[in-house]
Image 1: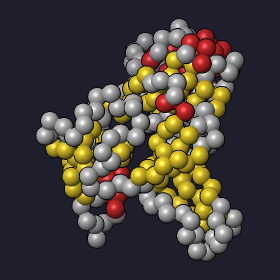
Image 2: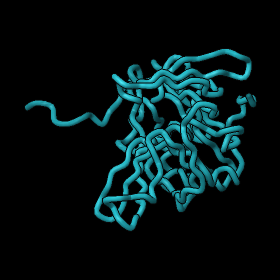
Image 3: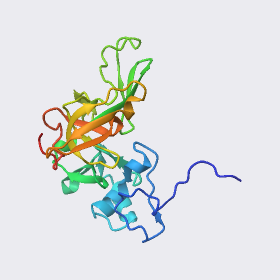
Length: 254
């Protein structure tokens, strides 16, 4: 009989390069369950506790911590040890008073320690939106969907969000408190490609006509004057004159 569906197992060698694991220690590694982030842009929660934070020594220990409800992801208790966590996700460990946010770096993703106050807010990038019978669904980069109720779904004037706009939300209610357009002059971080993790100001966005806007070329200028070119799909705005979150420790005002 032929193979049906995708496998639930993952070998260490083909796993994402930024995972902090030994490639030849054992053949298998925890595979993130289908969910908010893709395999190449996420880390299973148990690897965060075991390999990135060193709280657990084995997967069994990490699973025990998680199933006891001691780990909060984006304002909600998470009890699945293979849950994927990715860009801008907030991981809280209330018992030890530790809070972290996943941020891009030259290696992929890293855990930036944040304060308790900052753990209640995050940034989401709008990826798409669609009209439904009772409002407008706004799809964001972490795989979730925000439903915004409007008076007339055929003419949703209340929804002013466009693709690549940034929404500042508060947890656990996930209420939008502030919005930011992705435009020239904004501060941004590169989330993919060879320049991943670079911070700077957007100095130019290519005007697209014959290709998709996601592939538009964008020029980012760092504080020291270096310039990095990427595509709009890899650009994540973080503020206008100052970052909207305090996680960007390596960022220097420009």
